[in-house]
Amino acid sequence: MINIGTNILFNGKNFLDARQGEAYTTSDLLNWSLNIPAGFEVCVEGIWYVYRPDLEFDSKTGYFRKRIDAEIGESMDISGIQSQISELMDEVFPLTLTIRGGGGTYELGSKVIPQLTWTVSRKNIVVDPTTATVNNSTDGVRDDKKGWVGSPIASTKTYNVKVGYQNLTKSETTSFTFRLMKYYGVSEKTELTNSDILGLSGSAWATGWTMNSTTFNCTGGKYPYYIIPSEFYNSSTFKCWVGGLRNTDLIVNSQTVTNSSNYSSSYTVIRLGTIQTGQLSIRFGE
Image (tube, rainbow, N blue to C red; front, top):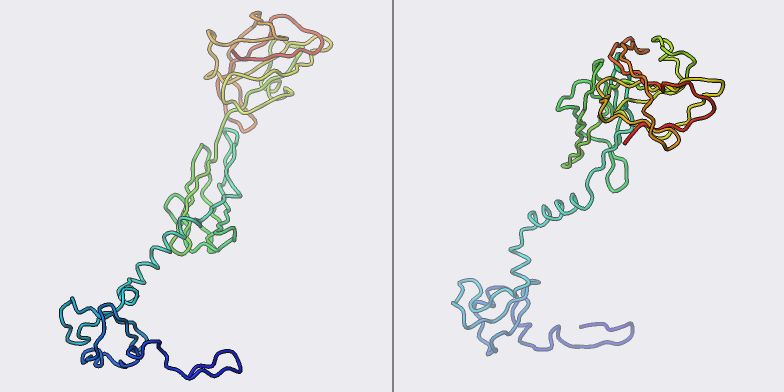
């Protein structure tokens, strides 16, 4: 008996073909005697079976076999599918590791206690890492796995941070770099002392011999100076441009410079050979 809507009563069987209601158990399928065509379907205990007289007789269901969708549902490896889904999710939503504190450039001669902090996120949500190492070691890693403190260093060193969350891992690197400075500016003097060099108006990390156009204020009569680590100076390639014109009137000397961190190194001191006045745009490069 099926109620359709709220006020219509339909007295009928559950199936349009009465033969579909003849089987209640697999034993009924085994002992089936009604005349039915190949492909006839019967629902027994919530599972659909198909009449297949072309197959061998089965000791439990006779010539009936589970419908393909029922077989798939039974034989499907759910754990395998879940594993594949998890792998896909891991690819689509990987971990993000952001090192927020630490690294940078420091003057040679100084000592630094390296410290790092980081955040870990997944799906744009910050999560708490379950594991963390720095250069494959847990030494110095904070209990919350979100930071690290190392031993003092005085030379360039790179650190690899590796974190884990659930079954995911992520690595990032950061470096503490130690460099010499280069110095530039003006002076009335034809030779500079160590303190004169450190006291010049301009300085920058020395990564090469070139420098973009820079204004040197020589008002009142001064010499423009450019002092770089000797390792970067080559007389055959070094070029100086003043106001866009090549200038070869240069005085070049070598001098040991001790920086503010008490580190001594060989420097090449370069100045124009003639005292200058006014503001000059000077470039060092090809």
